[in-house]
Amino acid sequence: MTIKRAASYALLAALTVTSSVATAAPSSADTAGHAAFALTSAAFTEGGTIPKVHECTSGGNDPRQHNESPPLTWAGAPTAARSYALVMRDLDNNNLIHWVIYDIPVSVTSLPQNVDHAYRPTVPSGARQVYYRGSASLYGYQGPCSPRTVNTYEFVVYALNRASLTELTTSSSTQTAARIIANASLGSARLTGES
Image (cartoon, rainbow, N blue to C red):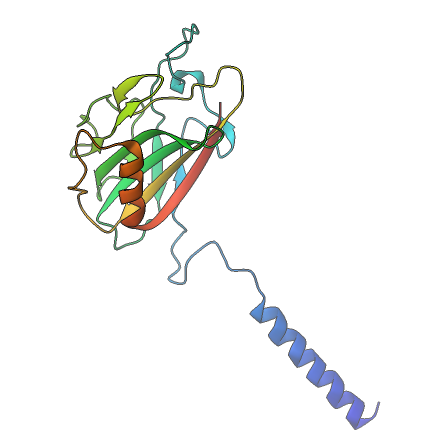
């Protein structure tokens, strides 16, 4: 092998190594080594079936339907978060918002099953919920209501840059709340389920 050819191979090898390093896929952890912001539920896995107990009771005759919110847990939120909010949407019904809960204290990293249907639920203390106007009229969670189709429901938890969304009141709409939450977001984590 000539010296010229050997030099060409060495240059080609160096370029290949540089190119593969530059195009390596990012890891699921951020640069500080922390896990990515993630939302999970003990009731169903990502893309899985949402149990009947979490489906709405309006218009249904199934005794297993109780309109109970699912248990949710999150981890890996941005360290600058000052509170959390959660928005649930029906992705197959024009992104209809089924649930908004906000002013969740930054010390809280989960929601229990069956959060009270109240403007200020008992748990988590300090949180507030938006009034749902649709197939039912109530504060808080309105479960999946698609008896003839299988729809995808999205739960998104937001880490917010404010401790309280003081401009939201008992008469705020779900759309207004979702917009204000998105504007205050430092990051979010998503979980979907089918029903």
